Image (cartoon, rainbow, N blue to C red):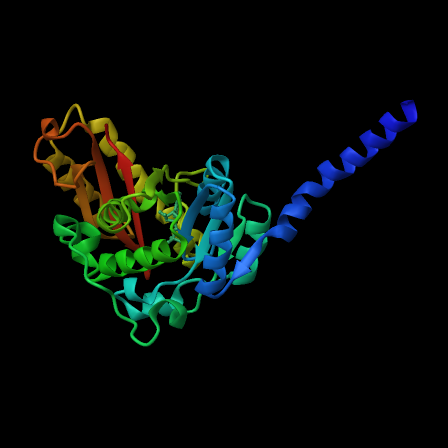
Length: 306
Ligand code: AMP
């Protein structure tokens, strides 16, 4: 009997040690939508819940936090890695976007990812690399919508195509791209009302810089300068009881004029619909949004004010 128990313990220890390695081996990689769709059908026939995390790769802890969140709530997690050409309004930005496929696959092996979808541009766009048209109303006319024409049409197009292929139970997005989260919710309400859309908090480095694939393009000195964005947002949060939104925005614009960063916009808006606020009592929840250039690299960030 004692011998049996010892053998069982030895085997189970091996299983525990081998589990992460086994999971990594079981992670599936699809480059074609047809292969992924068949696998998803199989998962669904087994009544498994599917979470989906769309990304453009160059994965960091922010992406992996979404994957882990999805793994904690679903049986299977699909992660897509696709640098979507239609959401880039600046061709240099598209050309310089970091691409680290092999490292990304390695990182996903030790996460809760079950399947990676790595389509090429043709797989999603066939012959015409063009966005479909979505009615995004006000969301397409302010902040990122205003400063990056066509960007959200591209985002809505690609996310809808992923939803058509994967049709997950729940899709996971970061509040780092807060306006994008609202755009996706709007698109999904119309075309995929059964998919739950969830937003998760921004992961930052130890000093407060929001993690972003574009940070890979910053020099060490620029990473320090980029902290000005977070510092100004924190300052704004402290001023809510003392200053009107317009005064806060004016001071931040002046702060950026004497900084090494180039401010593109600062906005304070209702967190529900992104309508800019004149007075604090116009909203139950408010957020501040900043877009700024650090050298050649365009960074965006936002923070809840209340
Ligand atoms: P991207 O690869 O930049 O398109 O981002 C893929 C997803 O990760 C989007 O839903 C982003 O909002 C989210 N994301 C990007 N950076 C962060 C971050 N620092 N913290 C949390 N989520 C993030």
